[in-house]
Length: 114
Length: 111
Image (tube, rainbow over all chains, first blue to last red; front, top):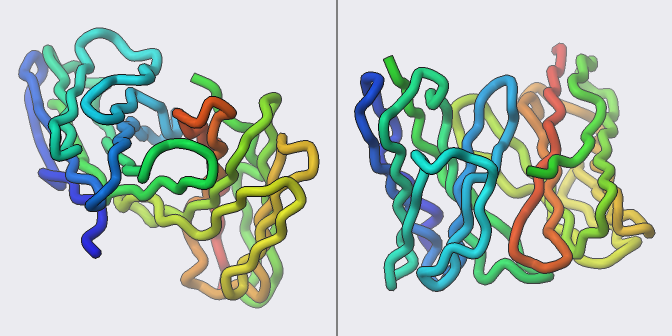
């Protein structure tokens, strides 16, 4: 059974550009969550999608957006990149985020903004 | 967003020693998860706990779901060099639609 796949693994962008990251969850999983991880801030929740609907959103500016497709694959987009957006972006998939569920992470996308 | 209080923040131990770390929250959780993360990689799930009081083992790892539903601990027995990494706890909200993460415990094992 394939795990969570995130693409690309590494990205280098310049300030002001935009970027799209992709996450393919484990087959059958309908919930996808996105996190930003930086050394000083730990894992910060961005948003969660379930069946193409955003159910939860963290405290990030509107430059961060996402969507989920009918096959549960999800994308997140960051527009007008800033240096502080450099981070490891992780997605996690769950069967359906209720009790007795587990979240499995992808390897992450390392974004560097220069 | 809410983060769980995880302690200690870092640990330096000798190979063969036992390790204990814990997570506390002001909120009740239905599920507690423990992860290990290696540098540059995504967190890997180690143990999942679903019931208050539950004690679960996975090899040298043992974790417990606190009776109050507001805390959990992870023990690693007889540590080895490959245990090095950052350990995170995560709690699933009562509404069941968001995981909250601890701030992480960085473990260094000295051979």
